[in-house]
Each structure stands twice: as C-alpha cells, then as structure tokens.
Length: 219
Image (tube, rainbow, N blue to C red; front, side, top):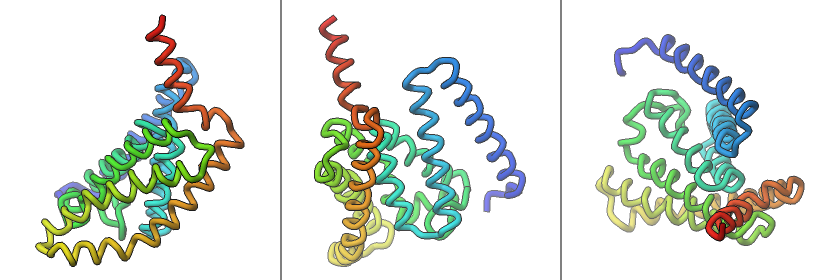
C-alpha cells in the first residue's frame, strides 16, 4: 500500500521498540523517577494491548484493555498508551480491529472512535486519579464518562460524516454496543479495585501527586 517492504518495516519497528524498551529500563534503574517508571508502564501496557488484539482478534477485548490501562496508569499515561496504539496503527502495524493497519484506518469510518479513545482515556485517567481506585462505583463512573460517553460523542458523528448516515442510524449503531461496554466497565472496576487494594501505591497514585503539588505550593 505504501511501497515499502512490509518485512523490512516490521524488522525495523521491532528493533526500535526493543531499543526503546531497553533504554527505558536503564532510565528506570539509573534515574528512578516517576516519569521513567510511567514511560515503562506505558510501553508495557501498549505491548499488552497490541499483542492481545493481534493474537485474539477480539475488538471488545481491546476496549477492555484500554479501560484497564486508563484506570491503572492514570493521567496522562493511560491516554499516552492509547495514543501510542493509534500511532502504531497509522504507521502500518496490523493491530487494529480485524488486523488492519495504516492511515486509512484513522481516516476511515471508525477513526473517530480511535481519536475518542485517546481523549476518553485521558479523562478517565484524570477522574480515577481524582476519585481514587478503591471504590468500584467511582471507577466505573470514570470509565463510563471517559471511555463510553466521550468515545461515542466523538466516534458517532465521525462515523456519520464518513458514511453519510443519518442521526437515527448513528444512534442505533451506537446503542447496540452499550450493553457490552457496560459489562467491560464492571469488569474494569472490579479488577482495578482488587489491584489497588492488593498494591496500595496504585491506589494512592493520584492523591499522592495532588498532595505533593499542594505541599510544593505551600513551600
């Protein structure tokens, strides 16, 4: 499609990813900063998202992983993970729904859902950092606002624009996925709360950052 040899591109990409991952591990070991750890978590989460989608071919599983990434990594790393996933699709990796890749995926009918996923993951991560990770109801609400409502608010109009379908057709198409999305929200809430209770630093991620910012202002 682009004129490049896919095998060569894949090898270059794989090599660059391993180099980046290795440098990130070194940065974590040497610097021991929150930014370095966050970058490593984003890379690992993105790898999990890509491989799950590639080997299973199940789009709904991809959305579930995005919800988990946004809720566990928080702001802005959850959104960065989804953005990296979209970028890899754009450069041609076949990790999109149905094993698709390339710029046409982003500019096509479902591109709005990808862009909405980035915005939604940022919002969900920010809300979970603010509300905490020990209450399944607030974690679920954060995911409904960010990765359901916002994604649909961006994705459905985009879909209508690219396909020329009317408002009723867009809403009908969107509503059929709502039950499945709510199931993913429930699963995400239970997993996040369980992880947060088992590993307290995850639960304190947002509140600790907020307390640090307040203490710096007072100082």
